[in-house]
Length: 335
Image (tube, rainbow, N blue to C red; front, side):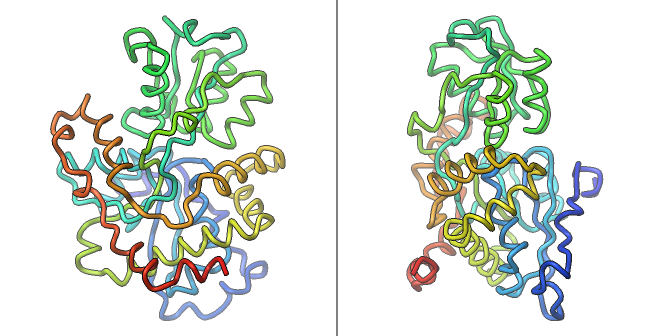
């Protein structure tokens, strides 16, 4: 299936206005053309957006087409098919695909815990009231699905037995599903959390507060690209790491870029997303770790038995980030 069939939205807004962004008006001859996809309308996906908008990809010799997919499932299908070279996606979706035989590998982790909230309709005042109700997620096998199961088990509820888990599609569908009472609770990320709060829904659990290491979001590519074109991966990772630093230093720019890609002008929601996802939880050093992958595999083991005995290091290549560390590249971004 071609990418145009798998992808629900190609952001025309990601085609940068040359008058507004002079760096894109420059001759692009010699730039490597690359396609990447991000897999959720969430602030945690911000680094490639800013890398493109601020010309940072260009600075590192890349011309990157930034594409959206509704969930990680469609994004992973596009990566495996060779329609994109990189994904911004959860470690769980990457590990699940790799366990199924796909030649995919994590090369960076931007958030290493589940920055999500379990939110419920106003009438659900206590977690035990979820029994017999429906909890919304985007798709099975995504990090949102993982968050749902962790949250339910935290409250002593058995997923799919005590509480139904219902797929609603993309994150942008979660608030409307709550509002229409198609689901009574949902796993939300920013800025959907702020939107839901404004409508009267409330937080039952801040999943990040549990402190569980988890490869929540990061950069994934095909193993073949790492083996055959490591310079491409190196440039891509340098650009994203620089974009993280720029976002942390330049709040105004980060908010502008987030508003554009998230298609919202809600200043309060954007500010909350920025403070939580970018300033508090986004890693300056996007290093994949065995601890964060171990939690991923423990969760997958319930559905994919071979995950139980899999070595966490099998699913990531941390050499690109370690090289940036040892060279002083990352430290220099914050001076």
